[in-house]
Image (cartoon, rainbow, N blue to C red):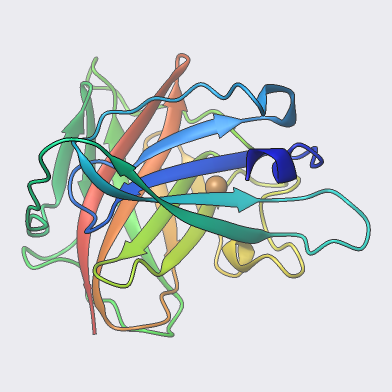
Length: 218
Ligand SMILES: [Cu+2]
């Protein structure tokens, strides 16, 4: 997969997610310059993993976005775990993510474009100033429990190139916005009902912050 990807000049992401979406999905972000020796941040336990490359080739005649997947095994004792229930508040490395939703989670319906709202404060308690990373202020990655269906949306700055509506790019069908520090409006458009795991991801001071949420889609 990395050999294939070396031809493409735009952002490439590698998502590793445990087979049953337990634990943490870790994103390895690599530009084409890094392909071949990507930095791998691996924080999971042993077991089968679903590796997903989300490619945005900037090559004439190629599709603008597609995914490649493969299963890899991490040796050791595998202990499957259940997904945690929805929590409106997640604190990751001192960053506090609060999703505006009832205790059972936001009411999300399959095949409907919807938005959820999040507040994000930093370790200092102040609203976070979002900075662009791979074209977006924040990335939202969704995996469905069991089938590992995948969807991805972006939170775009006003007038950001390569973020909002891109022909042929599923991720841009429902782009979110961040119009004020600490405020995220995140686009959700999921094809099937079920339990989904959402990873909201942004970069602050050189660090990638990933906040997971469990969503029930009707
Ligand atoms: Cu993204």
